[in-house]
Length: 408
Ligand SMILES: Nc1ncnc2c1ncn2[C@@H]1O[C@H](COP(=O)(O)OP(=O)(O)OP(=O)(O)O)[C@@H](O)[C@H]1O
Ligand SMILES: [Mg+2]
Image 1 (cartoon, protein in one colour):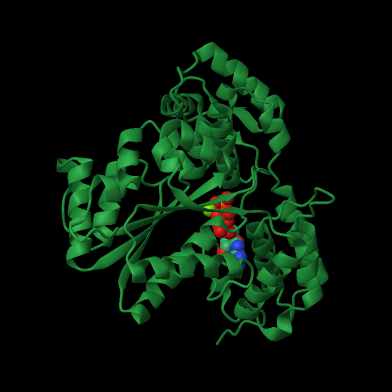
Image 2 (cartoon, rainbow, N blue to C red):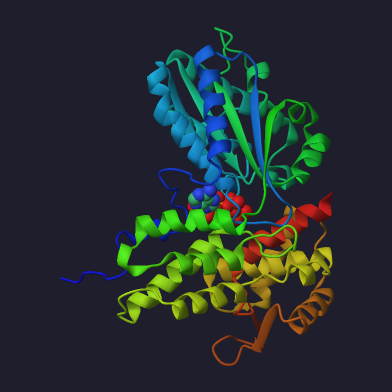
């Protein structure tokens, strides 16, 4: 039977695994958990909104992790207080309209209704009733919250209704049943909310700003992953230090991006390479290679910032096509997607010849690559893709952040 020399339980190096304890950000997590348990236990009677946001332009800094960890910990420990609570995580990128959010909420609390046929307020009332009848609380984590305020799919009124549920849909016993933990990319969410849903903004009871991780913090995070995922004989602390130093953020030198995702991915890649080479342990060379691979996946944010709004939209359209379908994209497919995205951002799509100018510029700058269609496709068309050294999933996120930025 094959036995790995390197891995003990590799899933702990996968994206999206929340470790059993948070060694870094433990204080923030405990504070939030205590706060929710207190509220549930003492019976709060007002809408409750907490906000987690990150430093501008930073990704992979643990926003989602903190929110999910807190939600799960609260759900797991309420029993001790004789209270029932359900934690519900929704990434609103995947549920961009109020009806989609309400449908998920209803499903998660175990309520079988068809929210499509009724108004948002009716659906919300049914959900609140259901919770009240079961004497239950819901802790709803809305991740990527900023995108709801930018999307044309959700009206501000509906969003207002949702977040002020306790005032708009009062319960019989006067207790607030739905608590919201909003996660947004950065501080600009506050001005966006002030502008679009001011009453909700003023009701945020608690805000937590997360900064990029320092080398010391990344080391702690990596060490925990190494302990969980790798055989003790396969790694040494100094290897983790190399990764932590490469990606850790040092304010004084303003360098390093503080991204835990990149740090963990580097460790995973080094471990996989060691395994593929049938090595007994991860070596410094494996680590160097993995770090440089992840550095190369760097997104040229400064260059992106110099692009026009519609160039950003076009690049986002191409990134999404490439992300979802892979390979090359025809200009026709790209144009269609671009028009959708432009509409989504309430912009009038630019015409054909202007798009060609953008495409030329983006390929001169090295963001995209173009080639002729050759055989197989009728007529002549240009095929496009994002340059291979750019990680498309990260590019999508950065572009969305930049677009939000421009709208303010
Ligand atoms: N404090 C932490 N302890 C352990 N692992 C962490 C911690 N913070 C982040 N991670 C890990 O780093 C990766 C990125 O974290 P996360 O997804 O929470 O970042 P994010 O700020 O939400 O990123 P994005 O801006 O892309 O949404 C995840 O795999 C996560 O498990
Ligand atoms: Mg996140």
